[in-house]
Length: 118
Image (cartoon, rainbow, N blue to C red; front, side, top):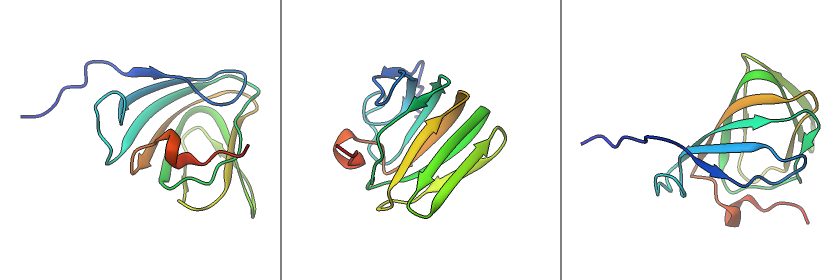
């Protein structure tokens, strides 16, 4: 039988000022480790530490823009666009003007596999 997810879990976010993470599918809300799906609502000026994750991340920006820095350059991902970041590659996310976006991590996001900078 299909599994209904009636509501997301609110997850504490890294970075400042705080952003809202609503995990619909993942290790916390659905006990799913294969992948995670979360809606992020990020204020203007939010920035998180860089990371070298053990998962691929597929992100669709719904409104605003997401900045994605890597060792080879910086992308500005506008509403209506998407970006894929690859496991094992260093990235840093920020939202200078604020954004709302959906992030899908494969396998599911885990604090133990994100490997944030100190």
